[in-house]
Image 1 (cartoon, one colour):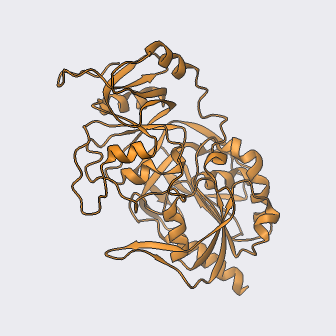
Image 2 (cartoon, rainbow, N blue to C red):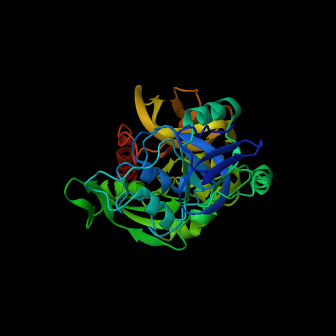
Image 3 (tube, rainbow, N blue to C red):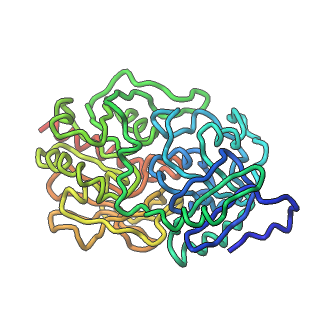
Length: 393
């Protein structure tokens, strides 16, 4: 599959080469070089900067279905990595329209320069509708995104690179994006004309186990009255308990949950067995399911976007949610002690669970709404309610 270039006589300065040998031509932006990963598509129409800095996308090349990416520029407020200077593990992005000069009062620079600074490769001028249709039909392909300003590429080498990449199954990527050491978090949510605030009072001590946590998740925990301590993904139950937590949060993150679960589930099971209120999101949801006896499966095309309808069995409501995952919890694998609380209205896949009789729950989607709707902010209140009940008891 090759994108027609009838609108331009310029040679292609970027390629997306798929494992089946397909070569898609376009205009390069951002960093130069080549990177290999799994090609997915995201249907959100806002929040491209949050998406491009979400560690949950490590190992992936993101195709934006919305054509106008970059038109509001980039800034330092919409970054989701906790360490703003760190890499997220994202391999690149695929765009339809060329990036225009930014027109937004919050912009501090052009997306092209921002991508260069973060060593991310971009390609524009691609028929993203056709690429999305291919992914929907055949699943998420392995691919190489390459940018060379002189238009010279070793296409056979790029095809070989794409074909030989092993894929995300079996990959533990949380270890690549987790915190290097324990640290505290006090920043609160963004407010109009104020920016981000800082909390000086807290009711609850929460340990956040970091599998690739996003800044806005930590902000919402802080805003809900939590004093948050972030620990590396490899932390033991003893290390977690040494902080005397009122609750434990299991964060989002990338890669194959079964691979990460080989070391993470032991600590999670110990915390759950002690009855400590526990809340998981995304990879944290999958980690909790594995710790409780469930299994996970690789999805055909994954869920990536800010418009995914989910039914909450506990409230009877339908929420529009933000999602980013290529693996899912197998509902049929959950033991009788676990209740399925949320399901996707797109495909019926599991999107939430609760351990019966204990203050332990999780959701597959991203309730922090960065980017995306705020329908699910109530989950942070549910977590603090569980902690208050435990303290009162």
